[in-house]
Picture 1 (tube, rainbow, N blue to C red):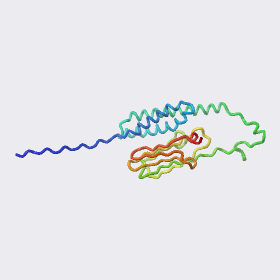
Picture 2 (cartoon, helix red, strand yellow; picture 1 turned 30 degrees about the vertical axis):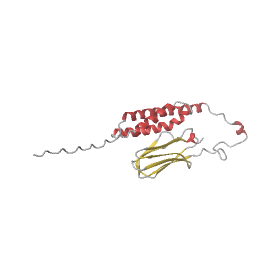
Picture 3 (cartoon, helix red, strand yellow; picture 1 turned 45 degrees about the vertical axis):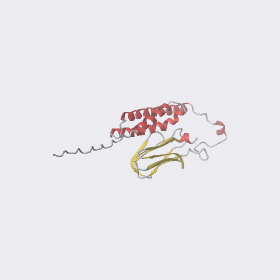
Picture 4 (cartoon, rainbow, N blue to C red; picture 1 turned 135 degrees about the vertical axis):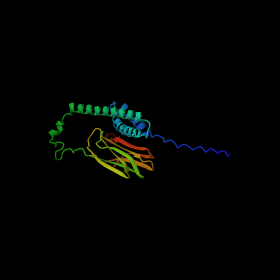
Length: 226
């Protein structure tokens, strides 16, 4: 009687590596923004940080909820710290606006006595020009997700499974103390992507990513223009 030869062992399927980058990056960015947000003057940089942190943390939380990541708790913590930092930033803006309203600058009486036309009247000082902001994402194939600010503050919009090249143009009023512009694009797994932010025809920020990486470009128009 012939003995049966044992079958060779079957190699196990490689385990799927969870992609925890979004939640981790969102928590770190939001935490840094929260630390900076209460500091006068320096706190201006907290605006783009907390907004980017909030977007990345939300994307990471969604991915973890679908089983694509294992750091759901860290992503949730990122949402919390980013939201807290955003609240602090909004409180600072409100306090600054109230201080300006309570202490208006004195009228320029000597200029008025010379008969100079009032601002806004024909021949007077020109109204602050609007800023034209253009977000661009280029690369091969598609972008998994593109998120961008739309009002220079906290409102954002996003698109999924976007065919490249992609471009979005918005207008922001001039003369604002703080105007945040931000665009975040996630690569779809193959090739690479490149994101840029143009303000009034000039590129102010750009970033790259490949694989499933995330390219983030953000800044404050007021700070970048000085």
